[in-house]
Length: 362
Image (cartoon, rainbow, N blue to C red):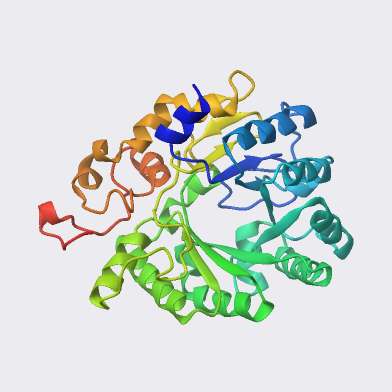
């Protein structure tokens, strides 16, 4: 397929998450990878990783999220980072913070990392450590944040919301602001990996809607960039709120930058596992191909799985009928994890489409 065909008919790749390793020094209850110290045979080699970054660059510059496991356990992480940076990618990294020191943060910045994300799933040690599975994880995360600040490396706070920490979210948000985070990304649990054992911790539709409205109000305050993740219904609320206020809906309405669509799995975002498997996202455990067998651009352009996910008018059930399907799309990973149908309803969405008596769309 020619470059023109890829750019003309296939959505541009904006973000790629690469699981550089599945090894991890924590044992998080909600980990999508069920990661531990390993070892995990079959990691992409340095050469294979560089080729992946080269192949992605052939499609255009993208945000490359180096994730895991714990990326700092990979010995060649600085070399891989520098290679992606030289290609013009925006290199960022998701870490748990416990292994960061001012020296490591400085080396990451010099290699080309432009931001790291550090998870805070509680406002204090008890709740954070309970979810992370290791005593001292909260103190380690705060120490890692201080290391980033000492090195002048921007950081954001990530939080996974479950029933058990829902009441703490306002305090976690205030902590992110206090610490000087560049952003606060709030993830809604997708029960995969070890998280599959936490289905009872999944937010109810009513709790989900309430927390999205709370996030929308915080976004309007403008104190910190706030991004709901694995929560595509936020984009419906964003439009509904703008309509009520008589505002023109633009990507800048609530500081949303270019993120004008909900679920980006296969439609601007992809995930590559430590063994080279390409998935729509890390939470949707369906494989579109393997970069050891086909170059990433071919998988991105030709995968039947990606084609199905991009055909939002062919989604099933309530999502098929919903007038917001092109701006929300529902969480495909949560639909698959809970129903076995990647094109089906997002089970925690409370919205009733117009065809079933719901409100107007845009």
